[in-house]
Image 1 (cartoon, rainbow, N blue to C red):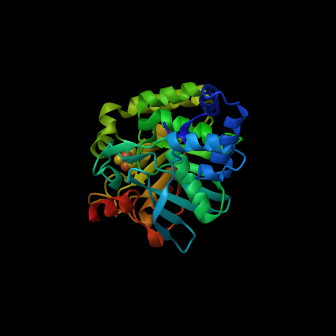
Image 2: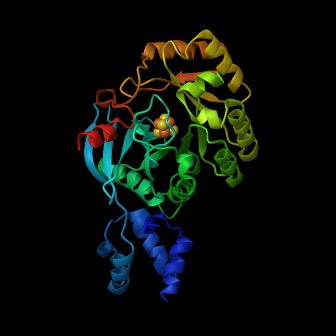
Length: 340
Ligand code: SF4
């Protein structure tokens, strides 16, 4: 595991095995996660002898920006490359309440959602916690802003990279590091039921968001193969258990595909599913630049959200940011990989 993925106690163990005092580990943690330097030579309070063996044995992961698109509304989209040449997308969005960074958790994805560009070539590999942190740190450096929140909604299924995502959460919320607020991290999943139970057991304060995208199980299976493995009833039961165990709310994402999942019966079924959750449904028009012949306008998404609202569901259409650089999630990477 790379050095930025390690907890402070694990760093202390490394130093202890070398016969070095534990405060050196705390200094290192501070350089990596608070000051966020990328070279050991910049760690000026660390003796050269220590910097040398650290440099030889523990390269610092970094996200190198190889494409940067800036929207007129301030949204920035990056294609970041890691040491092995693999790339992911990261988006920095500016809201009134501050900056939110959308982080990728894997290179590619094996979940196979039919409307998604990220899954077309399957999963290449999962990212380490250090690489996910590097996405946030580099976005902060490029925008010269500290992120107020993070959404794990980029390329990949976060719960398919469970251990590293938990490390990422623990490290980014560490008071001695980036010090993000516990509740400012949102994890979005397509619905890996066993991992939702595992997550609940950990009682983290993160916000769980479920990508539902269809209210009828058969329809959901036709666009999200994960539903064949973990059917809707099991998923909703896992969500109820998550709320009960953690005391946190679960929110839902619903991508509108016009003519497929935006009828009155879809709204009624969705309302019946989420009733009792005191939740919020984020309605999103499907991005036509994604995959397949799916389409929906913002207006059609608003009409569907209106149907939900009239049924007593708290639903809104997410503000669309970065319209003029609007590539579907995964498209920037896909286009780059395909033109190589
Ligand atoms: S929508 Fe998310 S889970 Fe589904 S294939 Fe795309 S990245 Fe994977």
